[in-house]
Length: 194
Image (cartoon, rainbow, N blue to C red; front, side, top):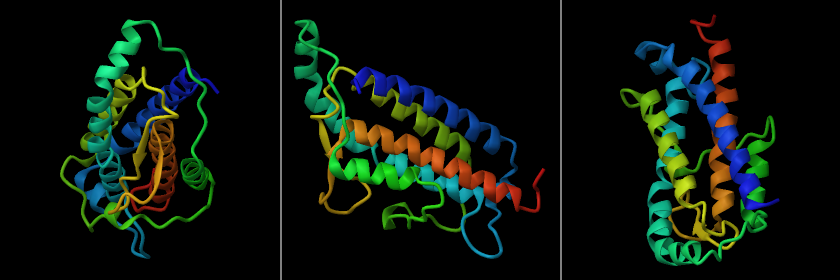
């Protein structure tokens, strides 16, 4: 797959999932966002908080990539040297993506992404703002070779696992899609369903 094709696909998927999550989240009151299922598990607000915390963790690595690559990418773009490279997932990035995409596959949240009993005030707006920031990073990194540009997984306290930039952008989108389905399930069994 060409990198431009991946970018176009991810833009469309992110726009769709963001619209869905905005429609689901903005119709809820603060009380409804704070509700958690009595049998356990996260409520809608906690899922939005988890999504926000996870996406925010990519901010620093993406900023470092943009700053580190600004000169070389700018020089390459100015010289016309940029081509549309082939993209493919790194081993771990592909594995994580497939795990997140698999329906019914229960995955524990990394410790860094576990959230407390109550979401922050304005959690839906915070999530949507973070999604816009991730889309801006994707746009700012368009001239980089996503397969060759690597980063450590921000989910872990130590830089033990690395994947490529395209993997990171795919993981963010599939993670939001996964939790949009979770939010729909929680809402369907909540006392305010309907």
